[in-house]
Image 1: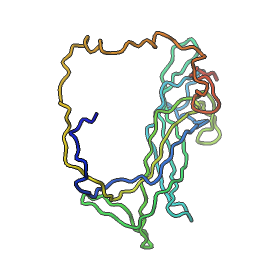
Image 2: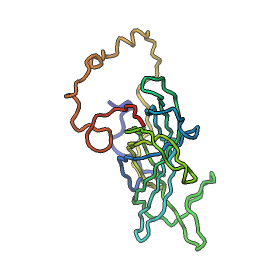
Image 3: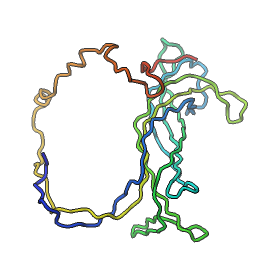
Image 4: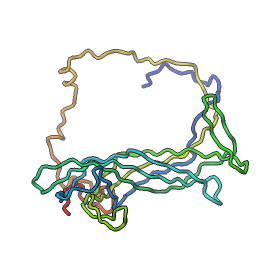
Length: 255
């Protein structure tokens, strides 16, 4: 049921509003293999023989948009993900772990339709859309946005990679990450929308004055938590986010 007062049956008027119209979008399931972790302390300690992922998150996404030649209205979007990684490092399987942190990078490219615009827009706030190059051509690129959920650590193993000088091997952790993402490309446009009379919500604001025990009594008993599922109850199509169906898990791996 609506929390607002009833609206009139007919539109009172139409008004122009400025919105960001999404011209194109796509969703993706990426599996980034052999991702080298750049350890914050430099090289992986020599006594570490096993590693396990503790936490992986996307800390930044660098985006670059360029028009696709000979395909008007389409744009190539280069994405570079920056991952912050926390690892539990072990000297032996039975030893106490040590927390290590590092950074990893992965790149991809998508092509989406973003329409065309040869205008420049200036705002009183000082913001500007569009630019003019040396040939007096107006360049007005669309804007890209990327949504992601927390990455899935599919594998973590210890290996050696070439150092910056290209000769000295460096021990580090190499990971495989799964990532779900949605990429959108949009432009500001002016559209007409139907409007109704102004309305206010019918729900009243109030503070819950019930005791903590009264609130607890309203919570459903979690019976499923006391009934561990069996292997047969696992959906057959369940995967770890990459490749063929397999048992998901994050087991310490040895060198």
